[in-house]
Length: 131
Image (cartoon, rainbow, N blue to C red):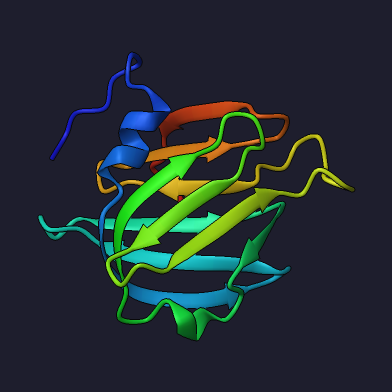
């Protein structure tokens, strides 16, 4: 298990986001939740928020393994790649997006939450009362 400190870069968190998808489901309103189990048995939770994503069918994710996650600094597009060569993209919803809603959230096994958006803002912190 890695230690997350105030000096941890968001890209380091994305760099550790690997593992088998063990759950994928839609949530309200137009949100997607993914649960990933890493090689050490840690559970990661990923949730879209104020974003558009593709593919949108939760069934697409079952049985897939996350091998890479990267963010395009200019567009804000998050790309999650899988071991079978497919990928999942999440784009912030710049049209009509609220000033206070993030595009996506990533909860780590160490009880850290990484959020992205709005306007390209990163937030890395602890969560103790969520999930």
